[in-house]
Image (cartoon, rainbow, N blue to C red; front, side):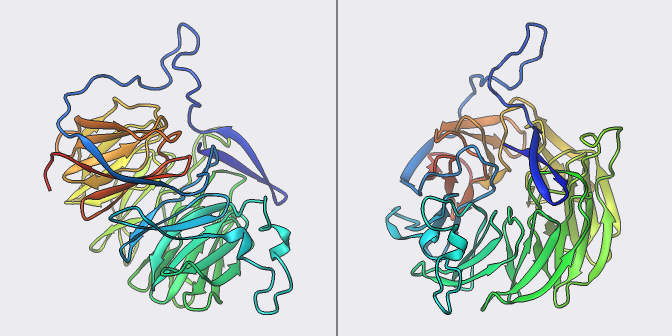
Length: 413
């Protein structure tokens, strides 16, 4: 569930839901349906499960962007409580499993005891940022304010750094550094080898924001970030100094809720063009080096975009799916048949676009027309994060911690 968060004197209060709850299809007799009832489709692709496994108890009803990652012949996945596992990507065999509640200590060097007592069972690690695999390591962040590096081969803890702010999005890893964007408005760069802090950039957050923070991206010596004030910026990777800032979403309206302008989706790039989208309704193409606006269009979204094959595919706040041209933002098609089903960000699979929904269904949309051409129920209390595709195999993580590898029996490469 995507929530609003309010900051008052340093405290964090969960308030209103941005999306409809989906508890019932209809409210009063004269109300519109709150989410789409699935209709029969002309099925052109059929899914087949290659293997399935489980990683802990999943994320439950908590807000999370915790995702699996495929690298080094393995699928790495985690649950919110602190279980991290590696599976053979071809067979699903579990290769290792660790519980961070028993690995992160208050002072690893002197072994003075458990980290503030928070990671001793039964308290959760609250993993919510990542996973990211690079440099033969797996990186993740937690709502407790921890950034963790694990050995990708063994699962052993390599380093652990406290950043004292919620980490609810993927770290950016590259150029020898790990950069996290926290819910409290901090961008922090750590040495990828040691976890030592290199620099910190902080911006003022508004009183009311969409829960979450956009994942940063490391590109050509810069760190690209979207903030909760509705701006996109580039920080110099070596120093953390701001190179440029550009408004993406502009607060408007008479109430704090109406004025939400967060840039909550991860920036996407293609060549020298940077694409960013705001919660209040702006999709913007920017010149990467200067921040100059090339074009902008009215789309309201907080899920990550898919930029590929000359197109931008996005899921908006109403669970409408769109395809646009990269060059000018011209809309090619839209699909509104899945409205209100809390669709995930889109993924590319064998020439089709795939999204997951709150009921555990995967939907394949033809990338040229937007028509729904396939559907499969993976259950698991819903799909909340975009599937990950590697060599045409799709890996899906569900809310209850299932990891499922699928392919289709027909479709274009």
